[in-house]
Image 1 (cartoon, rainbow, N blue to C red):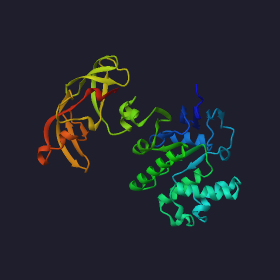
Image 2: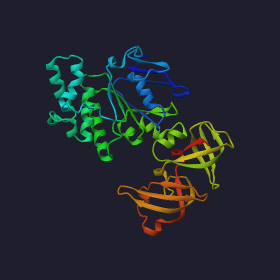
Image 3: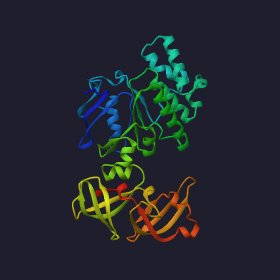
Image 4: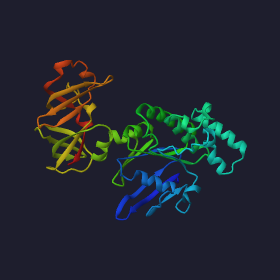
Length: 359
C-alpha cells in the first residue's frame, strides 16, 4: 500500500467541554486540491490549524510522508498559509513582502531575486513589484499573499477562507487564478470555505464537515450526484425535500407514497429504510419536467411564480399539501409565456435520479 503524502489520523480537539473536532481521519495524496467545506462552527478551520501547528490537537496525529508533525513548531513545518486577511507588511513593497520568508530562511540574495521574479510572474504582478500593499486592490493584495506563501516552495499550502472578503466577480477571478497556479505548481492545497460553489469550482475532492465530523468525502460530482446523507444532499446544490412514506425496499431501491398520495417506484435509498418508515425524498430543481417524456413519476402542483435569470428560469410551484418547491426549467419549459406559466398542472421527474433518506 502506498504511503499517503499527508495523513490526518483521528484528530480530536476540545475546548473545555466543547468538542470542536471529532476524530477526523483523511489521507491526502501529493498534488491534490482538497477543500474542507461546511457551515460555520463545523470544525474545518480547527482541523486546518492543527495541521499548521497553530493549535495542538487533544488527540490524534498529523503525518507528512509518514512522519508526525505534532512535535514540530509551526514555523518549522515549512507549510505555506494564506488567510482571509492578507497580513502583508504595509511598509514593505510587493517584492519585499514576497522576499520576506526567503530572507528569514537566509536564502542567498541571488536566489531571493530569482524567486521573487518567478512568484510575481506566477501571480501576474510583475509591474507592481515596487508598489506598497496600500496601493493595491483587494484581489491584488491576495495574489501577493499567495506569491509570498509559495515563494519558499512549501510542500503544502493551507488556505483559510482567503476570498470571503472579496466581491463575487473578484472572487471568481481569483478562483481562476488559484486553479491556474495549482496546475502550474502542483503544490498540495488544503482549502477552507463555507461556499459550496467555490468548493465545487476549485477542488479535486471535497471533505464536507458537519458538527466537527466529516460527513462525506469525494469529488464534487460524488457529493452532488451521490449524496450519502440528507445533510450532504441539502448542503451541496439546491434541493427539494418531499415528505414520503416507505412502502417497500429491495436492493437499495424503494417504493414510496408521497404526501399527496402518489406512489413512486424505483427511488434510490441513500440509507436503510424500513417499510412504513417516514422518509424525505430529495429531487434536484433541474430534475423536474413539465412533460412526462422519460420521467415516469409525477404529481400535481400549482405554479405560483416564475422568474427569468438570463441563462435559466426559476419556477416556484406549490404541492397539494402546501409545500413550495424550486424548479429550474429546462428545454421543455422554454415555451412558458406570461400568464400561461401559472396555474395547476403536473410536474414529472425520473425516480432513478432522486434520493430517499430517513425522516
